[in-house]
Length: 206
Image (tube, one colour):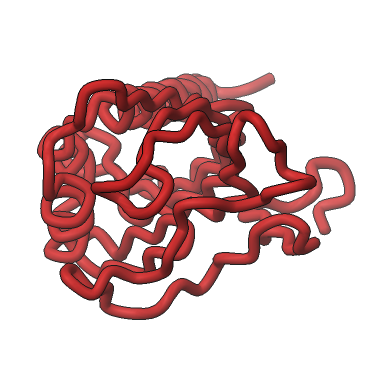
């Protein structure tokens, strides 16, 4: 029979998982509505990095601000633009210390965004899909994002599909707002790249 302390520990871990799920889902809404300042506040001041698709790695809280506010937020959304990126099938692992955690998510979305770059070009309807492998940290009783990684699988025109046109609108790191390091996890379809799991097999432990 579990002790009171063990039961309290289980309850706390369940609450931690729920808090992280909520954090990630809120991130998704802020991302879709281009609330870049609010996204920055979801990151720890000791944030490690953010890496999305082929845009490169932005390091530290300074890099997080540069990525969301100066790169993605360089211009306000234009009429007709749309972003719906769903945060799905989350697997959360709270580490034994109770202060750090990892999460893996599907990022599945529908967009109407410029096809040629981040901020200009013809609007195209696209399907997007990729995988998040994120790290979280608990500070002052609140969970924050420590590291965000989104590995893009495809960003394809609605009319074409990923077999015909796996990726449009990904043109590598920005020259105007350069990253701190080149992309390390950009291997889109038809690559067989599998972003490593942060967790072990639940049955075999391998």
